Length: 392
Image (cartoon, rainbow, N blue to C red):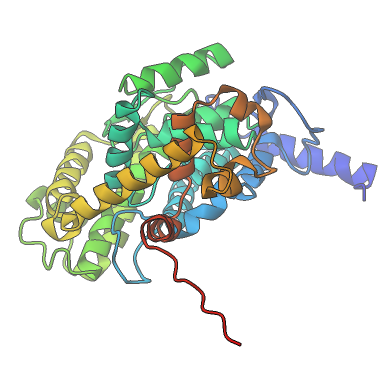
């Protein structure tokens, strides 16, 4: 069904009127750039960045967010954050900031929803193990932000805009920066050079101001929420060692309100220090608190012995699964799950297999697993099936 032409004109006028209110540094819908332009672009009802958000949430990789660890793996508690909730929190925070700064909220939402798609089972700990296995097999380090591009741009070939892909690639919320400024040209050559730079562990900012907003929103989203979750599952019991400057800044009197206080304070600080500017920034004292907050989480949460007590078993699981499926590919074992659940899928771009080595295919297969599927697969390849008894 087509929208009536007079209605389409009216809607276009409304959208253009909104864009006229954008900040000068904001990304306009007309600036979008796709690599292939595989489908007809109807930019009025669904502008290009809005369309990208749709393509991301309809991807298979996005569906697998539902059972991917944020921080607390092997914890039975339905009230803690998983990736699917984290990306929604980032989107909400980033759009709040973007709306106040008169930026492109469709672009912000698309980047937010796709930014963590490359994460592996068991979060950052799993990423480290998989990275070691990748290096041992000669395919370089594993980086979840690069892997997000691998899923969306290569394996599923969603033909997203360069602005969205770049924001996803450069979201690195684990590296604190007081101020973020857009960097890079809007070209596929520049985008590829960013990928190579990030593989060399360079910290590179997004090309758009909206990408910078998502990156700072990522930090805001996980700091307080990770602490709230740690208290929820008793990884830590109190805030006795929490930095005093953070307690003073957030006005914490009740630990139950800590995440609310963190979000309210940090979002307002970013708006205060970024309005009318070409950077996205924290103030000096808030930036210091964000740094100290992360250091606290790093020491007392992310490397907490209670969280890491099963680390050797997880390393064994990763090694077993990686080596098993690499051997299956080398031996062309068509009965292997890597064929039925990866290679033979009709939604994987054929061009992907023309370029990918066996080790890269195994990397991508494992990176796409949910925690539950990862555990199922380990059991399937290590525990023998029971012989089915026949009854007369």
